[in-house]
Image 1 (cartoon, helix red, strand yellow):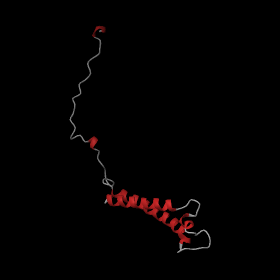
Image 2: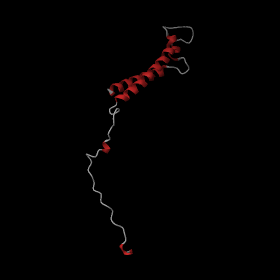
Image 3: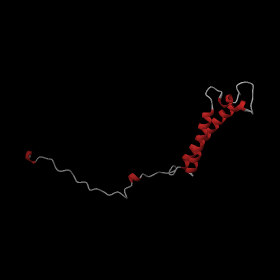
Image 4: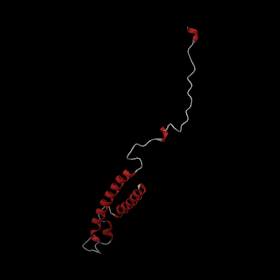
Length: 108
């Protein structure tokens, strides 16, 4: 299930990048390239800026919701995850020898 969310996240992120790249930072965007700057309207292109703005917000909202929903499907998210580094069944114990005595017997 996580892979489905991952694929959807990648697709939505790609669409979000495309929509953002089509927009013009000065407000002209795609509509200005079709002559929508004046009173001329070519096939409803005058409202392209509004569509791109709304689609940016919609895609960003969908992306955030997909990321939050994918967090619920991550394996071990609902319970306690155990670390294999702390697993004591497979490790071999190395015997520890005490250090050699360093007391000086000549002072007694």
